[in-house]
Length: 228
Image (cartoon, one colour):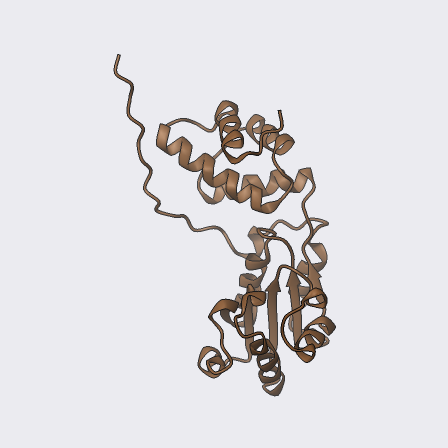
């Protein structure tokens, strides 16, 4: 009997839900969410979102951008000379991966510009600015003095809920047994959630299989996450 060829999936992408109502509020992020929700009643013009990859920084940044009508920028795209063009007439600015700027002093100038306009700035970074070793002391001290909105690592309940959300974003519906199997064996990180969901989506599409525990077991092995 001839083996059925594997279908190669087209990488069409998907649109994740990114509204405020789509964000899972849990102990690991409740303080940060509360700060976003209190806008514009902030005591100062600058705040810093901080957390590991996949912790929801970009999601919260997008939520705040909608509420504040901020211009949304990415750190790696910013330069000192290009700030005026990038910001335009905006009085609210959101910068994702702000610690990825190639010219660190860009953030110093951006803070000054926002202050002069009486506006607000929210930046998302992986490490607290107090730990940074790049850029000028003035830049680091200004960001370190801003409120730090930390997004922590998830517990098992949160991890399972985030798994379910990311599957739902891709219009996939794994059973409780699959979610439980993954949660008990995969790393407790949001980055791992994204990797697992993406891999299961591609493999199930390629082989035209449902999301089952055996498929989950293979994906964890492929990613090096299996602990059995």
